[in-house]
Image (cartoon, rainbow, N blue to C red; front, side, top):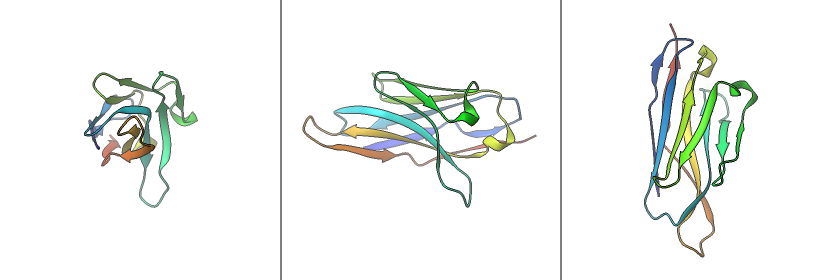
Length: 120
């Protein structure tokens, strides 16, 4: 199973970006999916998470500005980021909790990360 994250880049404060994360490979089903972010020297923190049924939770710092969504038919996760701030600058990682067969346990897979830089 591979997760490919893309959509990062340089944006001015107050701007918007949409990140995408496509899962491929031996996928039977995907449970929860999520976005995390990490800055150098700090731990990787949860940004937002979404279950297979569409329930979501967000870090307090992004509530009202970021929206997580998923397209189950395409095994793709999205993160719409509005009103971006310099403190949102980080490498953003996606993950997915995947069953590779009907009888397999759930494995967590990570994407490679995409850099978001918010600066004027």
